Image (spheres, helix red, strand yellow):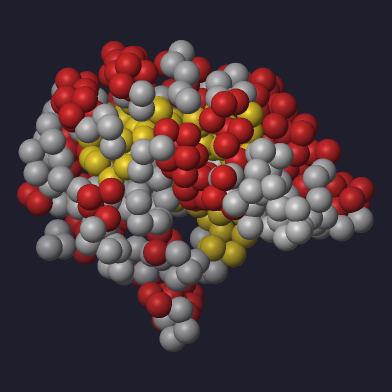
Length: 460
Ligand SMILES: Cc1ncc(COP(=O)(O)O)c(C=O)c1O
């Protein structure tokens, strides 16, 4: 039910964004819900953006926003950074084409650069999205171990396909006991038997995880998790170290999905913060500089299951085909290792090598400022996060350590605040986390805190 505060915020929101409303109405006639990815949607209608510049977005009605969504964390240099724009221009000019369909120098350059910061990745392959990277990680784990079930953590997101679209945001009442969560399907169209192929584990509960894994060690190929859930709820150090130990002992692979956390918890991702080495890592988002990309890396002996030199795959049509296709793990894609995108990604890393510490410091400054404002208003809240991502969680709970703790927070007040902030020119999709960029500085932090102050003290 809408509160009076939310209703007031929505009235103001609709007054400021008539062109977005009209656009979505028209788009709705040709695209389901008016959008091309459901994540872009929110009620009553999403704001349609026209342009971006640095930390700022401008919508169709000419309203300007400081952007904290940053395309779900992908834009670590903000919008339109000259280093990215130049790299892309230069690469296209130098290559004389946008795509070769052959190996390219930048594939090696980028792989070596990534390995410098993620030494757990002894070998690397590129994909076109985080989804593809996690999909490949699972297939690799199955191929390497000869086991065919995945364990994932409740509340963790790894992309939109059948094996992992389970228990990402389940209704707690249906999700079984906290120490042994039930697998809940998160989309229409997923076969009911999928719940049997993916085992759900409780995040930050090592004893419960260990018990489930021990019971099912002969079926489970790998545990895949976001080391920092949703990019902001950190694993306890003891949990992640314990999970590493237990999986090692049981012959189960450990996959860190660092699509969100890569280059955001620190340049070396969550694995450098925790000093824990996974068997396989997936990356995406930041390393594409705003273009679609994904990457998977891991131990050499695991990664080599996809080497085409060992056996033939479906694209080997020679008479002397060495072996059956099923002897090699299939991995291909027309756009894998796209040179233009790799040039953008390398440009991002070059800038972060200079500026990462500053982004981390600015993030802390904003978190401190928001916390102080809530404290003086007398509302219990925490800015939960590591590195350059955090979330504003309105709760009286002392510790928020997993999905179920988060469900007890006050989403309705947070939503009211978010809509008021939108009308004050602070953009994040309502209820989403905050991601920071090199483009966010003193000016943006101070404007954001002023907006928060007006909302907290005058509007709610
Ligand atoms: C942890 C994690 N894994 C995988 C994905 C899927 O990545 P993509 O949207 O690039 O397919 C996401 C996207 O948000 C993610 O956050």
